[in-house]
Structure formats: C-alpha cells, structure tokens
Length: 248
Image (cartoon, rainbow, N blue to C red; front, top):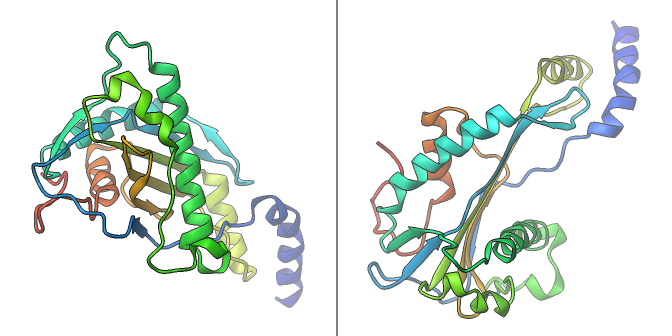
C-alpha cells in the first residue's frame, strides 16, 4: 500500500504544479468608514453584470461554455430584477440611451473587477494586507473620479457593479480530486466567486463591497441564481433589516 501511495503522489506531482488549489477566502464585506444609506434617499444604477461560466478541466484550466453562460445571464437577470425592489432605494437598470457611453462603461465594469480583486488580495487577506490598509477603520478604494463624467450616469447617485465567475468541475477534475485524496493531497473541484460593489458616482469611491470566493448556488438554474443573488447582496446598504433579497 505504501508503494501505491508513493506512486500516486509521483503521478500527481506534475499535474499539481499546474493546478494547485488557490487559497480561498471566506466571505468578506467592507465599506467606507461612516458610510450608510437611508431607505428612499438615493437612486442607484445597476450596471451590466459580468457573468462567466465554464468547465474546469482535469488540469484546472477553465473552458468557457457559451450555453451555460447564456443560461446564467437569463437566470441571474431574472433574480436581480426580483431583488431590485427589495434594496431600500430606487434601483434601475443601466441604459446607455443615445449617449454612446457603452465602451467607456465597459472599461469601468472591467476596472471594478480589478479593484474588487485587489481589495480581496490586499485588504481582506491579513497576511497580504498593504501597510496603508492595516488600520481597521480604513477602506480607501475606488475606480477614479472620471466616472462622474459619464453622461448616461448623470441622473444617479451610485452604481451597483456585479461580477460572477463559475467553473464547474469536469468528470476528469472530480476523478483527480478522488485520487488526490487517496494520496493525501487536497485538490479542489470547481471555482465559484462573485463581487457586488457600490460606487459613489460623484467621487468614484468604492463605498461598499461584498466579495466571496466560495459562493453557492448553481447559476445555470433559476433556484441557484436566486441563491447567488441573495449572497451577493447580503448586507446591502439601505436595505431594511429582515427583508429577504431575491427569495420567492
């Protein structure tokens, strides 16, 4: 048995170099010190969610799946629409209208994802925390004041950005997970994370962020999408306590 175990370890070694499991974070929420919203006081624009769905190969690489992504867009779109009326303030979908702002808005949507990842890496992880982020009352992140110049956002106070990413473990990946466990090595199957963040449209400051790298809910199903949206919007500013989000 000892020889079998050593053989399996050696067999997995090359693969594990390429697909070593990422260190995952527990769900974290951050907000600008002193920031709060009273229900019924502001107008929030829900930006176009960034949704990516694929399959995780045996080696850990993500292979995009267009059908799954389309299903997730439809299901998450419905769940978000149901949730908009439960967030305490007026929340409307982003509408480019006749402004031709589409490309620059897309850049800010990508920038938000980068900023959210930076918050997770350099503030939510204590070991990686930057010197300027070590104080408990510090949360200074943003996408820059230029967002205030976007004409299609002029009638809103805040922008709500949402990103989700899912890579479902393939049969090969799940088999690798089983054989790895036999060898005493931990290998994850599937990656599921999401960000929801609120940006002040006057200053570009990120005033609230909910980020989770261990999200639940299969976004390929309506029920799973509802669960995902509920997790993303947990603790949303201005929502009255006790009011569920996106739960039918």
